Image 1: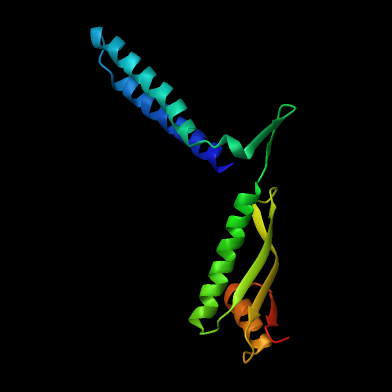
Image 2: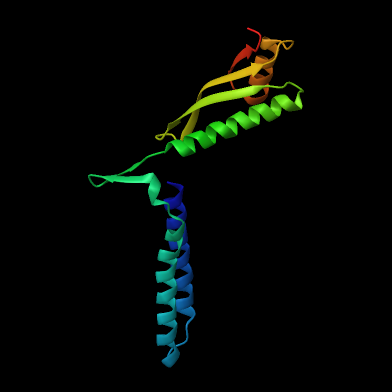
Length: 148
């Protein structure tokens, strides 16, 4: 959805700039040249943003656009969450393995963290690690000691 917002903003800005240049263009022989140049500028501004458009994420079904989020993007968000939690715990000198499961809510454009499991070695308090992660990151997690 952000692509369409950015594209429409770009088109509106282009049209405003084109109108200003059209009003300021000289009359006579050069006016025709300016109008052709402005028309080419508008045409390019409509098409140029489409080079960034990724059609793999869109499935057109019965005239409606349905956005599908593939598993690769899902794994990417899971890996990012795992890395951030692991880096935070590492800064607190707590070695840990982290696994998470995320889901997407397309209506609100939100990512929901369904399940986070943190595995720590014996000698660390599970409740302390759980409260650290919750207080710092707002993530409710399940903490497991390796020895259990």
